[in-house]
Image 1 (cartoon, rainbow, N blue to C red):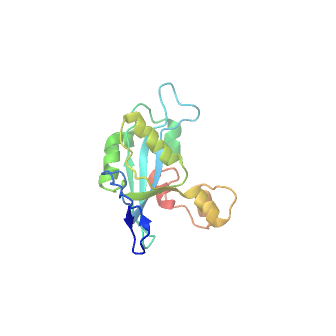
Image 2: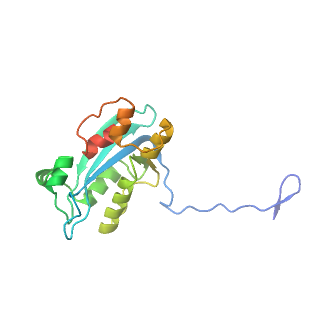
Image 3: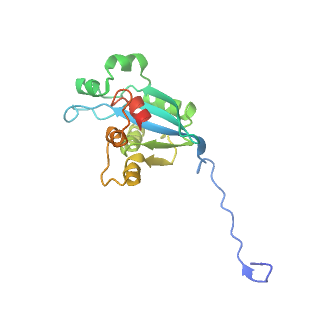
Length: 195
């Protein structure tokens, strides 16, 4: 035991060594707003199919000015599910778009990590679905989650800030603020931008 200047005994705490990669500091330059679109059906999925991410919509918000500085879409090829006519009606994403622009889920995660620095930036979404579905697809494929540990679900935060006792959709929140929705609803890139 050591003693302080007054002669009191003090136990010196050992500094914990941090493991490489255990805690990443979050960049405070751009916040990523993420909205996913996934395969979907009018009723339950057909045999052998399940919800899979088919679009990562990304909007970058400048940390200081709070202005949207970019928006982008990453189209993803589903592994075992087909794009249903219901899904195309809802999202406008069809098999032709998937075939022409789609990348594998693994490639999409790599783009998120390298181009958008998703591991090192906070990310936000409207609801928990996006966070949960990303993890499900990562688990299914044995891929590391491309996002960092800091995630904010904006839906209940908006309700709290506005004093509303129920959660609203993105469109409902924009309507509450008298702001028109820009783009196509249920397209990840436009939903992320409007969030």
